[in-house]
Image 1: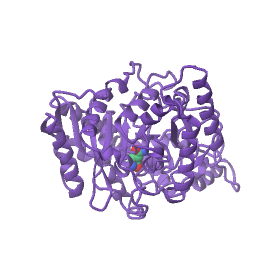
Image 2: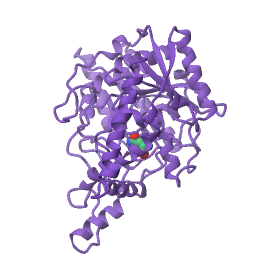
Image 3: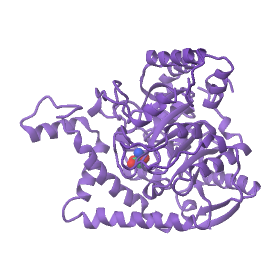
Image 4: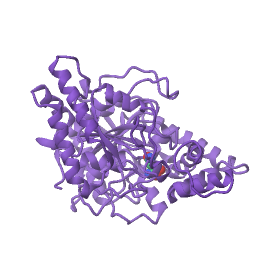
Length: 485
Ligand code: GLN
């Protein structure tokens, strides 16, 4: 690989061989400039600050000072993570001018690892969506076919890596928003276990489901980035105090003996035949490597979408109450009294999907309905987790397609929220259970669109997940494909 097609690991090696961080960062900033009119992955790019960070890495390298794990590597950040002094919009008009006074945990961790933050990426408003079309600002295009969506809600971050505008990016995954766009853009996307990465400074959508994770061209790079951002942080009470393994050290060690569970429910109705055959072919790759395959069942996954749209909307209705036109964010100009100020500011600031979710969530929590909807959903959520526990007693990892279809056309599902919600049918249960999952490229359709394989494992088994994913990568070359733009 050469130029901007390279991975983070390539760029780290190149710097050790004498290439400057400044020239690397310049090449990626130029790639953003030249491809952005087609891809539209970024909401903001801070060229000067990126170059300054790169020069600082070069100076410290020359003086022999120790450098962090991702020194000089350009990284793009989903615009839902607070960056000190830099606009953080969450893809919403309500935060058009919001400049947080602090950095999110992952931002401090990346700065500590000497990564170079190049810009903030487009997303569905408040991470609600599966196509990035719910952004209040722009529609990001799939780099493999500019008439198609990149997936969502972290579509900008996925498209930026696929289009080689940055070798690494950060996304968030509440119901699939890292894995689904990774699958649709032909790259790797990892959702860690709930609690593995601190959510401090992540603008909350559904606090009990949200996790932050990497996008990259290959599994090794995801391991590197997870190593840089994982770990305990007292500022997020749900972040877990467990040591962070050196994921990148063990990445090339195959897992054996390996038993793969294929959930019956992931290979049923609604699954595109080309996607199914690519996923089955990927499983055959593992069989050739000596893996054993068993059928497993996740019987409650048929309720997963319903449960998710009660739990996630209930939490969102509460989290988004803070945007009231008083503390920060958009404030309506014309209003008559306090209640009218709230209503006018929120009505003007939030887009249609966010308003729909706030109303659904408020209804699900309302007196008289809370037991029937929200509390019942929590009980079924527990059963969904129980399915995963039971399945993982008979296998080491669970595999299947990441999404039921390849990327759809811009506008194709925009007016049909239920059809859009079904894009996450295979990814949502993993968030409800709190387990980790990864999507890796495992083929392309005849029409030239990427297909992803999802691998899921038990809580805090990211190391195993990455090693298993790497086994497929070592036996295939899907991860080496780059789109022509
Ligand atoms: N597509 C799902 C939703 O619209 C998941 C989004 C996410 O993971 N942030 O809620």
